Length: 149
Image (cartoon, rainbow, N blue to C red; front, side, top):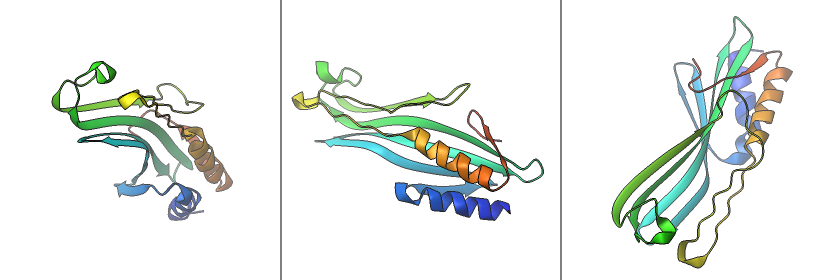
């Protein structure tokens, strides 16, 4: 199977997640917003992204993934949102999967205006689908830390 055919197969398998695809110099990236909260003039979101590169010589697909949390806008400056002061702010956090894969679900809980928001996303499901597609194509699946070079 060719590299282009593998990319097409992976894109077809992940179509149900409605994410965004980009490609730059053979490095493919898929990202999808898994949680977003908009309140008054502030916005927070968690984005899952995965990258892969196909090595035809070694018949290997190098894969990596990460979560990024970003927020911006006006905050109340109160105790329930202590990470941001009053006024305009921006915050970005990144969670890596150093040294191996992550399991389980990603949860964010907030007590904004007395309500708890819980977001769950099974990111290992995406990794397993990509791994199965790659292995069914006769290639080796190699999990790595970002960026995939």
